[in-house]
Length: 395
Image (cartoon, rainbow, N blue to C red; front, side, top):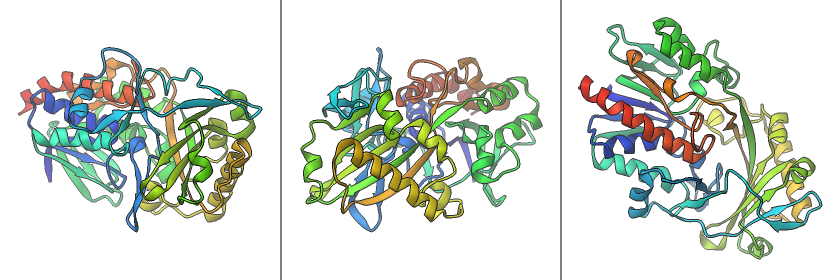
Protein backbone atom coordinates (compact mmCIF):
# COMPACT_ATOMS: atom_id res chain seq x y z
CA UNK A 1 0.00 0.00 0.00
CA UNK A 2 1.30 3.45 -0.89
CA UNK A 3 0.35 7.00 0.01
CA UNK A 4 1.71 10.45 -0.73
CA UNK A 5 1.95 11.45 2.94
CA UNK A 6 1.97 9.21 6.02
CA UNK A 7 1.28 10.80 9.40
CA UNK A 8 2.11 8.75 12.47
CA UNK A 9 -0.35 9.65 15.22
CA UNK A 10 -3.96 10.81 14.89
CA UNK A 11 -4.06 13.10 17.89
CA UNK A 12 -4.71 16.82 17.59
CA UNK A 13 -1.45 17.54 15.73
CA UNK A 14 -1.77 14.75 13.17
CA UNK A 15 -5.43 15.48 12.41
CA UNK A 16 -4.77 19.24 12.34
CA UNK A 17 -1.94 18.74 9.86
CA UNK A 18 -4.23 16.81 7.50
CA UNK A 19 -6.90 19.52 7.72
CA UNK A 20 -4.41 22.38 7.35
CA UNK A 21 -2.92 20.82 4.21
CA UNK A 22 -6.39 20.58 2.68
CA UNK A 23 -7.23 24.17 3.53
CA UNK A 24 -4.06 25.14 1.66
CA UNK A 25 -5.32 23.33 -1.42
CA UNK A 26 -3.24 20.16 -1.33
CA UNK A 27 -5.24 17.16 -2.55
CA UNK A 28 -2.74 14.30 -2.41
CA UNK A 29 -3.38 11.12 -0.44
CA UNK A 30 -2.91 11.18 3.33
CA UNK A 31 -2.84 8.14 5.62
CA UNK A 32 -2.82 8.56 9.40
CA UNK A 33 -1.57 5.61 11.45
CA UNK A 34 -2.83 5.56 15.04
CA UNK A 35 -2.02 3.09 17.80
CA UNK A 36 -5.32 3.75 19.61
CA UNK A 37 -8.83 2.68 18.69
CA UNK A 38 -9.68 6.03 17.11
CA UNK A 39 -8.52 9.61 16.66
CA UNK A 40 -7.86 12.01 19.50
CA UNK A 41 -4.77 11.03 21.46
CA UNK A 42 -5.03 12.90 24.75
CA UNK A 43 -8.12 14.67 23.37
CA UNK A 44 -9.84 11.34 22.77
CA UNK A 45 -13.07 10.31 24.47
CA UNK A 46 -13.20 6.97 26.25
CA UNK A 47 -16.13 4.91 25.00
CA UNK A 48 -17.41 1.38 25.55
CA UNK A 49 -18.63 -1.08 22.95
CA UNK A 50 -20.85 -2.74 25.56
CA UNK A 51 -22.15 0.51 27.08
CA UNK A 52 -23.32 3.02 24.43
CA UNK A 53 -24.05 5.76 26.99
CA UNK A 54 -20.48 5.76 28.36
CA UNK A 55 -18.45 8.71 27.08
CA UNK A 56 -15.68 10.27 29.14
CA UNK A 57 -12.96 12.75 28.16
CA UNK A 58 -10.14 10.93 29.90
CA UNK A 59 -6.97 12.71 28.76
CA UNK A 60 -8.06 16.35 28.86
CA UNK A 61 -11.44 17.78 29.93
CA UNK A 62 -11.16 20.78 27.56
CA UNK A 63 -8.64 22.75 25.55
CA UNK A 64 -7.68 26.42 25.63
CA UNK A 65 -6.50 29.03 23.15
CA UNK A 66 -4.41 31.57 24.98
CA UNK A 67 -3.39 34.09 22.33
CA UNK A 68 -4.47 35.91 19.18
CA UNK A 69 -4.65 35.38 16.35
CA UNK A 70 -6.20 31.99 17.03
CA UNK A 71 -5.31 28.96 14.90
CA UNK A 72 -7.04 29.27 11.52
CA UNK A 73 -8.61 25.82 11.87
CA UNK A 74 -10.81 26.94 14.76
CA UNK A 75 -13.21 28.89 12.56
CA UNK A 76 -13.85 25.88 10.32
CA UNK A 77 -14.40 23.70 13.40
CA UNK A 78 -16.88 26.20 14.84
CA UNK A 79 -18.79 26.44 11.57
CA UNK A 80 -18.98 22.66 11.37
CA UNK A 81 -20.32 22.38 14.92
CA UNK A 82 -17.34 20.26 16.01
CA UNK A 83 -16.39 22.48 18.97
CA UNK A 84 -18.31 24.62 21.46
CA UNK A 85 -17.33 27.07 24.23
CA UNK A 86 -16.74 25.60 27.68
CA UNK A 87 -19.05 27.41 30.08
CA UNK A 88 -18.52 25.38 33.24
CA UNK A 89 -17.27 26.91 36.46
CA UNK A 90 -13.59 26.65 37.45
CA UNK A 91 -12.40 26.61 41.07
CA UNK A 92 -9.36 25.62 43.11
CA UNK A 93 -8.71 23.54 46.21
CA UNK A 94 -6.00 24.48 48.70
CA UNK A 95 -3.98 22.29 51.02
CA UNK A 96 -6.56 22.64 53.79
CA UNK A 97 -9.39 21.40 51.61
CA UNK A 98 -10.95 24.83 51.04
CA UNK A 99 -12.51 25.64 47.68
CA UNK A 100 -11.69 29.06 46.25
CA UNK A 101 -11.39 30.98 43.01
CA UNK A 102 -9.61 29.47 40.03
CA UNK A 103 -5.85 30.05 39.94
CA UNK A 104 -3.74 31.19 36.97
CA UNK A 105 -3.02 28.04 34.97
CA UNK A 106 -1.52 27.61 31.47
CA UNK A 107 -4.07 24.86 30.78
CA UNK A 108 -7.13 26.99 31.50
CA UNK A 109 -6.23 30.55 30.47
CA UNK A 110 -7.79 32.38 27.54
CA UNK A 111 -10.72 30.94 25.57
CA UNK A 112 -11.88 27.51 26.75
CA UNK A 113 -13.33 24.98 24.32
CA UNK A 114 -14.95 21.57 24.28
CA UNK A 115 -15.39 19.16 21.44
CA UNK A 116 -19.02 18.66 20.41
CA UNK A 117 -20.68 16.56 21.67
CA UNK A 118 -17.52 15.21 23.34
CA UNK A 119 -13.89 16.26 23.22
CA UNK A 120 -13.07 13.79 20.45
CA UNK A 121 -15.24 16.01 18.22
CA UNK A 122 -12.09 18.14 17.85
CA UNK A 123 -10.11 15.48 15.97
CA UNK A 124 -13.16 13.99 14.27
CA UNK A 125 -13.94 17.44 12.91
CA UNK A 126 -10.38 17.94 11.71
CA UNK A 127 -10.48 14.59 9.91
CA UNK A 128 -13.85 15.45 8.37
CA UNK A 129 -12.39 18.70 7.05
CA UNK A 130 -9.49 16.80 5.52
CA UNK A 131 -11.71 14.14 3.97
CA UNK A 132 -13.89 16.74 2.26
CA UNK A 133 -11.00 17.86 0.07
CA UNK A 134 -8.90 14.80 -0.68
CA UNK A 135 -8.31 11.11 0.04
CA UNK A 136 -7.66 10.86 3.78
CA UNK A 137 -7.51 7.49 5.53
CA UNK A 138 -7.24 6.62 9.22
CA UNK A 139 -5.70 3.27 10.19
CA UNK A 140 -6.46 2.73 13.88
CA UNK A 141 -4.95 0.09 16.11
CA UNK A 142 -1.72 0.30 14.14
CA UNK A 143 1.72 0.37 15.74
CA UNK A 144 4.63 1.52 13.60
CA UNK A 145 7.81 -0.23 14.72
CA UNK A 146 10.36 0.60 11.99
CA UNK A 147 10.99 3.63 9.79
CA UNK A 148 13.06 2.61 6.78
CA UNK A 149 14.25 5.13 4.17
CA UNK A 150 13.46 4.01 0.63
CA UNK A 151 16.49 2.94 -1.38
CA UNK A 152 15.80 5.61 -3.99
CA UNK A 153 15.76 8.36 -1.37
CA UNK A 154 12.22 9.35 -2.36
CA UNK A 155 10.31 8.46 0.78
CA UNK A 156 9.83 5.89 3.50
CA UNK A 157 8.71 2.33 4.13
CA UNK A 158 6.92 1.70 7.43
CA UNK A 159 6.83 -1.66 9.19
CA UNK A 160 4.73 -3.00 12.07
CA UNK A 161 5.57 -4.72 15.34
CA UNK A 162 6.06 -8.11 13.65
CA UNK A 163 8.16 -6.69 10.84
CA UNK A 164 5.23 -6.72 8.42
CA UNK A 165 5.08 -3.96 5.77
CA UNK A 166 2.46 -1.36 6.65
CA UNK A 167 2.80 1.47 4.20
CA UNK A 168 5.06 3.14 1.66
CA UNK A 169 4.99 6.93 1.51
CA UNK A 170 6.66 9.74 -0.39
CA UNK A 171 6.70 11.96 2.72
CA UNK A 172 6.49 11.15 6.44
CA UNK A 173 5.42 13.22 9.46
CA UNK A 174 5.71 12.22 13.11
CA UNK A 175 3.03 14.05 15.10
CA UNK A 176 4.32 12.85 18.47
CA UNK A 177 7.61 11.94 20.11
CA UNK A 178 7.15 8.26 21.00
CA UNK A 179 9.09 6.81 18.05
CA UNK A 180 11.81 9.40 18.58
CA UNK A 181 12.29 9.01 22.33
CA UNK A 182 14.07 6.36 24.45
CA UNK A 183 10.88 5.82 26.44
CA UNK A 184 9.68 3.58 23.59
CA UNK A 185 12.40 1.15 24.65
CA UNK A 186 11.01 1.11 28.18
CA UNK A 187 7.36 0.85 27.15
CA UNK A 188 7.74 -1.68 24.35
CA UNK A 189 11.01 -3.39 25.22
CA UNK A 190 12.59 -2.39 21.90
CA UNK A 191 16.38 -2.50 21.55
CA UNK A 192 16.48 0.74 19.54
CA UNK A 193 14.69 4.04 18.97
CA UNK A 194 13.12 3.92 15.47
CA UNK A 195 13.82 7.54 14.45
CA UNK A 196 17.35 7.45 15.78
CA UNK A 197 18.05 4.25 13.86
CA UNK A 198 16.66 5.77 10.65
CA UNK A 199 18.63 8.98 11.11
CA UNK A 200 21.83 7.02 11.63
CA UNK A 201 21.13 5.01 8.49
CA UNK A 202 20.56 8.13 6.39
CA UNK A 203 23.27 10.25 7.96
CA UNK A 204 21.56 13.45 6.88
CA UNK A 205 22.72 16.23 9.28
CA UNK A 206 19.39 18.02 9.82
CA UNK A 207 17.51 14.79 10.54
CA UNK A 208 20.26 13.63 12.89
CA UNK A 209 19.99 16.94 14.77
CA UNK A 210 16.20 16.65 14.96
CA UNK A 211 16.36 13.04 16.16
CA UNK A 212 18.86 13.96 18.86
CA UNK A 213 16.80 16.94 20.03
CA UNK A 214 13.58 14.90 20.18
CA UNK A 215 15.28 12.12 22.12
CA UNK A 216 16.31 14.60 24.80
CA UNK A 217 12.88 16.13 25.46
CA UNK A 218 11.76 15.36 28.99
CA UNK A 219 8.13 15.14 30.01
CA UNK A 220 5.91 14.53 33.01
CA UNK A 221 3.42 11.69 33.21
CA UNK A 222 -0.14 11.59 34.51
CA UNK A 223 -2.06 8.69 36.04
CA UNK A 224 -5.75 9.37 35.45
CA UNK A 225 -8.55 7.72 37.41
CA UNK A 226 -11.85 7.47 35.53
CA UNK A 227 -15.05 7.11 37.56
CA UNK A 228 -18.50 6.47 36.13
CA UNK A 229 -21.39 7.23 38.52
CA UNK A 230 -25.03 6.26 38.11
CA UNK A 231 -27.71 8.94 38.35
CA UNK A 232 -28.44 7.97 41.96
CA UNK A 233 -24.83 7.82 43.15
CA UNK A 234 -23.93 11.08 41.34
CA UNK A 235 -26.45 13.26 43.24
CA UNK A 236 -23.86 14.92 45.52
CA UNK A 237 -21.41 15.40 42.67
CA UNK A 238 -23.98 17.20 40.52
CA UNK A 239 -24.40 19.79 43.30
CA UNK A 240 -20.77 20.86 43.23
CA UNK A 241 -20.28 24.54 42.25
CA UNK A 242 -17.49 23.68 39.80
CA UNK A 243 -16.87 21.54 36.74
CA UNK A 244 -13.08 21.79 36.79
CA UNK A 245 -11.23 21.88 40.10
CA UNK A 246 -7.54 22.79 40.22
CA UNK A 247 -5.40 21.59 43.12
CA UNK A 248 -2.92 24.16 44.42
CA UNK A 249 0.72 23.05 44.89
CA UNK A 250 0.04 22.40 48.59
CA UNK A 251 -3.06 20.37 47.72
CA UNK A 252 -1.11 18.38 45.10
CA UNK A 253 1.54 17.55 47.65
CA UNK A 254 -1.06 16.44 50.20
CA UNK A 255 -3.35 14.39 47.96
CA UNK A 256 -1.31 13.58 44.83
CA UNK A 257 -3.98 15.06 42.55
CA UNK A 258 -3.49 17.88 40.00
CA UNK A 259 -7.08 18.52 38.95
CA UNK A 260 -10.54 16.93 38.82
CA UNK A 261 -13.22 17.36 36.16
CA UNK A 262 -16.94 16.56 36.32
CA UNK A 263 -18.59 15.49 33.07
CA UNK A 264 -22.25 14.85 32.39
CA UNK A 265 -23.05 11.68 30.48
CA UNK A 266 -26.31 10.39 28.94
CA UNK A 267 -29.05 8.81 31.07
CA UNK A 268 -28.29 11.02 34.07
CA UNK A 269 -24.87 9.50 34.65
CA UNK A 270 -21.80 11.50 35.60
CA UNK A 271 -18.14 10.97 35.03
CA UNK A 272 -15.31 12.09 37.27
CA UNK A 273 -11.76 12.25 35.90
CA UNK A 274 -8.98 12.53 38.47
CA UNK A 275 -5.62 13.63 37.06
CA UNK A 276 -2.68 12.76 39.29
CA UNK A 277 0.14 15.09 40.24
CA UNK A 278 3.42 14.65 38.41
CA UNK A 279 5.02 13.27 41.57
CA UNK A 280 2.31 10.60 41.97
CA UNK A 281 2.62 9.55 38.32
CA UNK A 282 6.41 9.35 38.60
CA UNK A 283 6.06 6.86 41.45
CA UNK A 284 3.80 4.64 39.32
CA UNK A 285 5.34 4.93 35.84
CA UNK A 286 5.24 1.19 35.16
CA UNK A 287 1.50 0.84 35.81
CA UNK A 288 -0.22 1.39 32.45
CA UNK A 289 -3.83 0.37 33.06
CA UNK A 290 -5.41 -2.71 31.52
CA UNK A 291 -7.39 -0.66 28.97
CA UNK A 292 -4.45 1.37 27.70
CA UNK A 293 -3.05 1.06 24.19
CA UNK A 294 0.09 -0.55 25.62
CA UNK A 295 -2.04 -3.35 27.02
CA UNK A 296 -4.67 -3.73 24.31
CA UNK A 297 -2.60 -3.20 21.17
CA UNK A 298 0.78 -4.47 22.30
CA UNK A 299 -0.30 -7.16 24.72
CA UNK A 300 1.71 -5.68 27.60
CA UNK A 301 1.72 -7.98 30.61
CA UNK A 302 -1.23 -7.26 32.91
CA UNK A 303 -0.52 -5.93 36.39
CA UNK A 304 -3.90 -6.29 38.10
CA UNK A 305 -2.60 -5.91 41.65
CA UNK A 306 -0.49 -2.83 40.89
CA UNK A 307 -3.31 -1.30 38.87
CA UNK A 308 -5.80 -1.88 41.68
CA UNK A 309 -3.43 -0.24 44.16
CA UNK A 310 -3.05 2.90 42.03
CA UNK A 311 -6.82 3.12 41.48
CA UNK A 312 -7.45 2.69 45.20
CA UNK A 313 -4.85 5.31 46.15
CA UNK A 314 -6.33 7.96 43.85
CA UNK A 315 -9.88 7.07 44.87
CA UNK A 316 -9.08 7.41 48.59
CA UNK A 317 -7.27 10.70 47.99
CA UNK A 318 -10.24 12.06 46.03
CA UNK A 319 -12.76 11.16 48.73
CA UNK A 320 -10.52 12.59 51.47
CA UNK A 321 -9.89 15.86 49.59
CA UNK A 322 -13.52 16.55 48.64
CA UNK A 323 -15.42 14.65 51.34
CA UNK A 324 -17.55 13.05 48.63
CA UNK A 325 -18.32 9.36 48.25
CA UNK A 326 -17.45 7.36 45.14
CA UNK A 327 -19.47 4.34 46.28
CA UNK A 328 -21.02 2.40 43.43
CA UNK A 329 -18.75 3.89 40.76
CA UNK A 330 -17.12 1.98 37.93
CA UNK A 331 -13.38 2.63 38.04
CA UNK A 332 -10.56 2.37 35.52
CA UNK A 333 -7.05 3.71 35.12
CA UNK A 334 -5.45 5.52 32.20
CA UNK A 335 -1.73 6.32 32.35
CA UNK A 336 -0.26 9.01 30.03
CA UNK A 337 3.48 8.42 29.95
CA UNK A 338 4.36 11.76 28.34
CA UNK A 339 1.39 13.95 29.18
CA UNK A 340 3.28 17.24 29.38
CA UNK A 341 6.58 17.88 27.57
CA UNK A 342 9.09 20.12 29.28
CA UNK A 343 10.65 23.11 27.47
CA UNK A 344 12.44 24.03 25.33
CA UNK A 345 11.05 21.48 22.89
CA UNK A 346 12.05 20.95 19.26
CA UNK A 347 13.22 24.15 17.55
CA UNK A 348 11.09 25.30 14.61
CA UNK A 349 14.01 25.05 12.17
CA UNK A 350 14.24 21.30 12.81
CA UNK A 351 10.56 20.51 12.18
CA UNK A 352 11.05 19.93 8.45
CA UNK A 353 13.94 17.99 6.91
CA UNK A 354 13.46 18.29 3.13
CA UNK A 355 16.45 16.13 2.18
CA UNK A 356 15.04 13.27 4.25
CA UNK A 357 11.38 13.92 3.35
CA UNK A 358 10.28 13.94 6.98
CA UNK A 359 8.61 16.51 9.26
CA UNK A 360 7.49 16.87 12.87
CA UNK A 361 4.57 18.52 14.63
CA UNK A 362 2.88 18.28 18.01
CA UNK A 363 2.78 19.89 21.42
CA UNK A 364 6.53 19.25 21.90
CA UNK A 365 7.43 21.78 19.19
CA UNK A 366 8.80 25.01 20.65
CA UNK A 367 6.52 28.02 20.29
CA UNK A 368 3.21 29.48 21.36
CA UNK A 369 1.02 26.90 23.08
CA UNK A 370 3.92 24.55 23.85
CA UNK A 371 2.78 21.50 25.80
CA UNK A 372 -0.91 22.06 25.04
CA UNK A 373 -3.54 21.39 22.38
CA UNK A 374 -3.01 24.94 21.14
CA UNK A 375 0.65 24.22 20.47
CA UNK A 376 -0.22 21.01 18.64
CA UNK A 377 -2.60 22.91 16.34
CA UNK A 378 -0.26 25.82 15.73
CA UNK A 379 2.69 23.54 14.97
CA UNK A 380 0.56 21.58 12.47
CA UNK A 381 -0.51 24.76 10.68
CA UNK A 382 3.08 26.01 10.55
CA UNK A 383 4.32 22.69 9.16
CA UNK A 384 1.54 22.59 6.55
CA UNK A 385 2.56 26.01 5.27
CA UNK A 386 6.14 24.88 4.74
CA UNK A 387 5.25 21.41 3.48
CA UNK A 388 2.76 22.21 0.70
CA UNK A 389 5.33 23.58 -1.80
CA UNK A 390 7.49 20.51 -1.28
CA UNK A 391 4.56 18.13 -1.66
CA UNK A 392 3.51 19.91 -4.83
CA UNK A 393 7.01 19.70 -6.22
CA UNK A 394 7.16 15.97 -5.51
CA UNK A 395 3.83 15.28 -7.24
